[in-house]
Length: 347
Image (tube, rainbow, N blue to C red; front, side, top):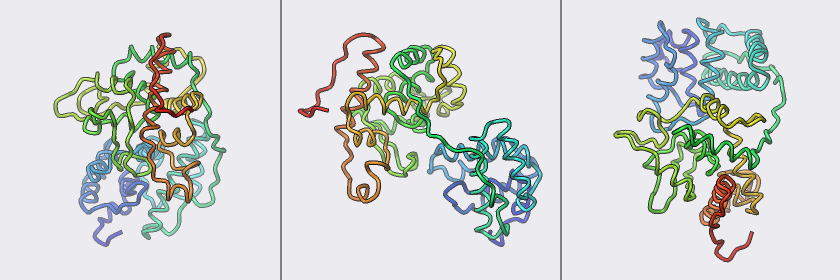
């Protein structure tokens, strides 16, 4: 760190130290933030980390990865290590913490915490604040198994009907299902991102996982859901409950939908993205179009193909997402839906 960095921040309480992490991209923390940290260190507040990082990087958005990182540090690490400095944490402390998290929250969350702490301490090693990371040599507890959960048509219908009783949270979940977008992207949807004439939703790079502008063609059903949301003066968010901030508390949203939908088999909000992709596949949509809908840069678009393939499949994506929305509507209402013509192409 800079010689001007207050010593209190360099070695002070762990809660203050972790904010200087800069988050996954490794930005240097400005003197302004360090000054604020020094002033706040003696009396931490619950949301200090999120508030300070958002204040320092207002134009970077608030990606899901940043939220998860803050959540792990604030909810799991801070209560155990409050009052300690980064210099005092030893490998046995990390092992004990990871094992405690595994016992209470399961091996997957324990491995996530271990990964977050590994990046966290590596950031300090690279800046010569500590000599070595206490996370070195600590192995993962489990094996990450990719989820395969896809909601079937009756479950989709049950969820859709449940969404109709949950206001903004139901509209949010419906949009997840129809667009296949990530939950953080949909939650942060802004009116300024929607072109009503062309019915497209354009996400700026700072709100996209791969850092590239991404345009989502909205089916007529998805567009109508967004258009039906009330607009609050001075608020640009489409899905907001209070007219000040986007919807959040996804676990709370999920519980509300569970109580109404009564879906027997467990599911997550992210499974709606997989359900959308699987549904389009069942309708005969080509894999490259599905990957383009999901904004994936792997599989079909990996390697040299990704370097030279610049076609955005916007027309094909519009058709695919409309066909999927029509399928959902038809199954929910049990009424024939007008299928969008394929412009001479047959899938």
